[in-house]
Length: 105
Image (cartoon, rainbow, N blue to C red):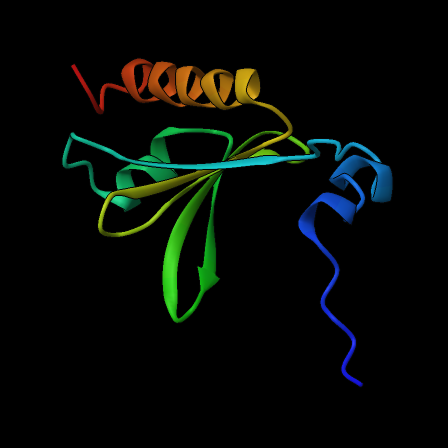
């Protein structure tokens, strides 16, 4: 005798099985519209450093520990932050630094 599969109505609810998940970090992507040389960014902005990943040299702009922006040679940007509000803070801080150093107008 084959046992029938349990019905969906008999299945326990998701959060009866698991605790409510906590958001620990957010990763978002965007692109830099201005064509800015990565070397000029490294020279002109104090909180940047060169990082090598996947055989590419990228720029890391770190606002605070765990809150940073990665800028790739193609002007693709990844922002890593603990929450959505921090993503905006990183982008604002990076824009401000680009403007102060004269790299964007």
